Image 1 (spheres, rainbow, N blue to C red):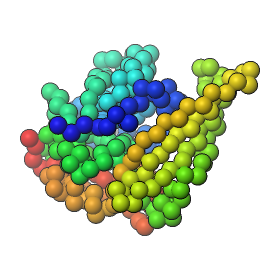
Image 2 (cartoon, rainbow, N blue to C red):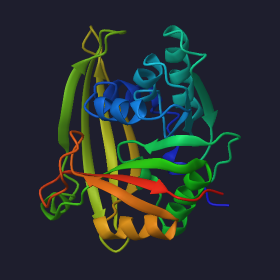
Image 3 (cartoon, rainbow, N blue to C red):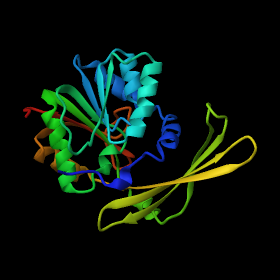
Image 4 (cartoon, rainbow, N blue to C red):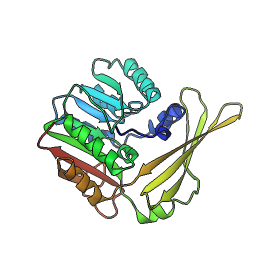
Length: 262
């Protein structure tokens, strides 16, 4: 059995992760468009606190959200209940590289860089094969990952970069999110450390660190993985607006189909 390493445990960081990524909405219209083309249930692998699945459920889609973090799923459950969408959403604690559900789906998606938490070819293929076994014949798999940029990779030298500063609407506290990256070229991974400074109304600050790895994947490496796992590549896009993939594209959005299941 392949498993995600303990370092991917988001329990201590779930609240801050939710605050940081809840600001992102740029990929939602793309997933809404893909979801509109299917009639059956949809599976999200790595659903986190529900950032993507909630807008889809609000459009009437039935969605299963799978995540390995019980704390992230607790946040998602609260949001689903508050939105009165429990009839449209099923949340499952599980591992994206080794899961077994009772349903098949017409659409499975793995949102922003989640696939990069598969660190080995064994884990990558296990994830893709699990997804294929859960797809109906002709079903689509969408994977959104980072397009490795040589210039960006040279900047993985441990420098601390401030990504955003915003207010937590619930507490009123100010959140500053920074990160650093270190490159391991031999393993084709980056170690990313999030540094979150939270300042309350009295000026008292607390700092939280969260470190994790991500394995970057190149275009033709990903295409070979998909082919090996039994998919045919339908399209490769370079943005959430589904622009053609080019050298300057920051993203690689793979849309693959499976012509056989099981």
